[in-house]
Each structure stands twice: as structure tokens, then as C-alpha cells.
Image (cartoon, rainbow, N blue to C red):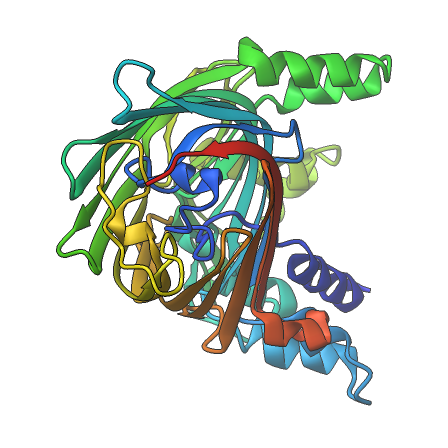
Length: 481
């Protein structure tokens, strides 16, 4: 039964990931207004835009670096217990991760300054759900094999690292064309937390050695912490009147829960009319968790040799509970405590950068006509007016086990004014064969965009280490050269 439960747990980890981290297809795809969320210093030619509520931006992403659902549940004639042991328990490392995220735009819009057309203002509300869990390494092996035949091995408690959160973001940004070649931008963010869990500051070990008074002596040295916020309010609402849960959820989403502040910054610089570099730093900020916060700690060290019965002294009190004595001894040496103190968490900061070479016939040019365009604030920049572009992007994010990076090569193509596309190849810890495609369609003021990465993995999604899908619907008005 234990091994069947293990198989189910591994399967859930493989099915669960949906993570909004590296949006390589959307970054620098400036025909789409939502690209401003990844670089507030992106240069655009919109007079204004309005996202269709809830439909303007939906992003689903998945990542599992070390194992897939297919690895465990494929009908390949192998015993599922053997596959769990070989491919998960023994096959994964503590750097293998399972990540999950969904992003949904509730409201979005933007407009160009009337008296300062070099400024473009954007604003909106979006909801994020993120989860990451690293493979617990030693703890997984301890649970699977036990400790009877592993005397002297220290099982590292620091292998347990996990984090999950659900929150809403209110934001306002400004993109300013400082000169013909330089655009700078910034975005202020107000976070409204709905739920949060975190257990990343763990250390210590568990080891079994030969005992002196009994066969075995077990030593536990633990410095472990688990924090949560918002869960109790949601649980109480769910256990009570079912109609109270949506009200509680919305109340916390609209500034009734944990609160935090953050900012983004970015730039676009044209080295020449054809060479362009960009960069952005996102989610520099924090959140204060003060709504029904819970912190559980395990801190101390104890060595026990099981239930010790010393005769004939033990016969003096036949009603003595020796097991409870052992429990009390361990709890005194390694106390388990909890409190309701407010705590602080920092956002996982992200970094983007790109270099792009634009070439081909300018989009604004009609066949046979020379392009004598004048770049003015609010118009389409030279860097956006070519039909083709080749370039490279870099992405990095701060994670519990250190920075994580990805490298992307891309090709962009514009077909008239109604279609733009971006094709990508990305190399990261999830996959070395990640091919993606993003499309933007225009029909008058209506814009629809669709994006998906790791397209080769769609042949067998259960055997894919990563997948993502994005779409959105906007109404916009563009400027002109």
C-alpha cells in the first residue's frame, strides 16, 4: 500500500505543474500590449488599448525537470513499484523540481499621454497562482527504504523545499520615449495576497546508529519551519456556508488580505536602426503576511534508543506509560511550536534581456516606394518597422536553490498589418528541444494572440517535461509613422 501511495504522489507531481515564469514568446513581442508586463520600457505604437475583461491574458505553464507522468504510468509492461523506485526515488536529484502557475488578467488597459505623447501609461489587475517543490531527496529515500539497513547515514532534512501562493496584483506603469533611440519604463505594483505556504528554510539531519542500551539509537537534529497565511480563512468559509467562500476569496483578492509592494523596470535601446537591445527587472518587492498567519517550527536535537524498560525498577509502577515517556522526552528536546506572528516574504525576482537584429523591407513601405519615415514620439520606431527580426533572449529567476536561467533564440516576421509571428527555441533545465510559436492577428481594432511552447511535446503531453499556452483578446488603436 505504501508503494502504491508513492506512485500516486509522483503522478500528481507530474500532472500538477502550471507555472508562469519564463514567457519567452511574449517578451519583446511588442505588437501585443501585454508585452509591457515583461518590459515596462518596451516601445509601442498604440494610442490606446483595452483588454477584454478576463480574456485579455490567460497563461498556463508547466515544468517538471526530472520525470514525467509517462515515466511512471506508461503501459510498458514494467512493474509500477520498480519504475517509482528507479526513476523517482533513486533517479531524481534534489535540484529536480515541479512547478505550477496560472496567470489571468482581470482588467487591463493603456493610453498615450495627450500633452506628452512620448509617454504611454498602462494599468490593470491580474491574478497569479504559483507553486514550486523540489524533490525531497533523502526524505524520499527514507520513506521508501526505511532506516533499518542504512546505519550511519545522515538523511538531510534541508532537502525539503516548497512554496505556493495565490495573489492578485494591481499595477500602473509608464513607458517614456526619452530620445529617438532610448525608451525607459517602470511599473508600480500592489500585491493582495489570498493564500501562501512556504517551507524553504530547513536544515538538520536524521541518523540511526548502533545503540548502547538498545539495538539502535536514533538522532534527530532539526531546524525546520513551515509558514502559511490565508488558509484558515478559506477553510472556515468552505466548512461553513458554501456561499461564503467566493465572498471570502474576492475579499482577500481585493485588498482584504495580505498586502505587499513591488516594482518593475526596463529599457529599450536602438544601437542602430537595425540593432536593438532590451532588458527588464521584474517583481522586486515583498509581501507582509498578516491575515491568519501560521508558523510551525521544529528546533532542537535528541538521541533516543526507543522505549527503555529497566528491570526491576519498571515493575514498581505497572501503570506507567513508557511510550508516552519517550514521546515527552523527544518533545522536550526537539520542541514543536507554532505561533501567529506576522511574517515577510520576498518576491522571486526575474531578469530578462535580449538583442535583436531587424532586417527586410519596412512594414510601412509600399512596394516601389522609398521609406522616408520620421520617427516621432508615439509613432512606430524604426526597430519595430522591419518585417523580419533575428535575436537571442536570456531569462533568469531567483529560486529557493539559487538562480535558474534559460536561453532563447527567436525569429520574428510581420505579414502586412494583420499578422505577426514569433518562433523560438529555448534551452533550460526542463528541455533542450523546446520549440515555440506565437501568433498575433489583427482585424481592425480587434487583436487576438495565441502562443504555445515545446510544440514537439504535444505529440505526447504525458511524456513532456514542459508546456505552456497563452492567449488574449484586446481592442486597440495604433499610431502611425
